[in-house]
Length: 405
Image (cartoon, rainbow, N blue to C red):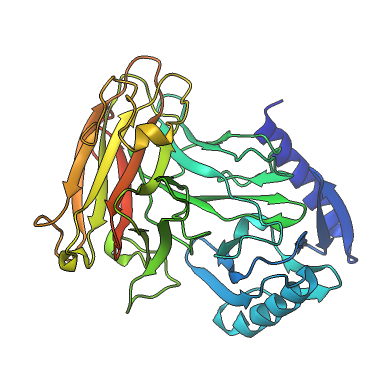
């Protein structure tokens, strides 16, 4: 039986049988415990290690809005202490639409399925798992299905809560929803009762875009990974930028409404760094147009040599990830091109900047036979960089009927 269907039937049966009880009961679903009381479902949030020190953000997302609260953790702080303080922050945040939380020794009990929630911020300890990567979605007109693909980090999760809404086993990397389910979709995973960060994608009739947003984890945009090529470690910085004077809680309808954006900084002249992601489950032989918005921010004032560029390339069959050498231009891409200009969409540097504004660029690419994946990446270099930005990307299938707006 299809994994998605099996999970759906399991959850529905649990809702009908256990949901009738007036008393809370514990149910183990894919090694993850849910608590049912009446027709409500709860789950426990726990941590399995001490804190690294940083900002810990608890995010609650619905179809119409997102809510989040943050606390500052301390290096070596116990999981129990962090949970108690997070509970206090959630309770204080209820005036902003947050759910109830119930602290107990070892965890927090929170209503609804874990797919409604995620963790973000710069805190890297507490056993918080890296979230699913490269979430991609598209509508298949022939099968009348909305299909999602993603990749999981090396360490397995206990359970994945995918866009289609049903629990999947830990190694699942795809799912589908019957019908045309357009709009925003998210994915989150759990390990040892600890939530991951979130992946989010907006699916349109013949395109997908990163429009809906939520706070970043580890300073990296949702769905993306960081990369750097340098002789010395820690010479690149990745940060979440926040636009002033925007409603941080409403989901945006245009890129200008996105409150969060990626900032990449480099400290020395010999480092190249940026972010990258795959776009999965594309159609071999189809022509795609990629749109991206970049901003050179305050780099006009830099007196050093620097560069910002964006690149697109088809992967080899089976979507093997690019190496750091390839992203830096030091090794050939699958099409044989190599160098700083290989697969380049746009480039900026001294004398050619966005003048502090967000500028959209586009580039078309045709997928080779048997290839269903493309990789997009941002590359930045320059000593003492004050940072460059990226806030939005869209991939449109030009081989499908009318272009989406």
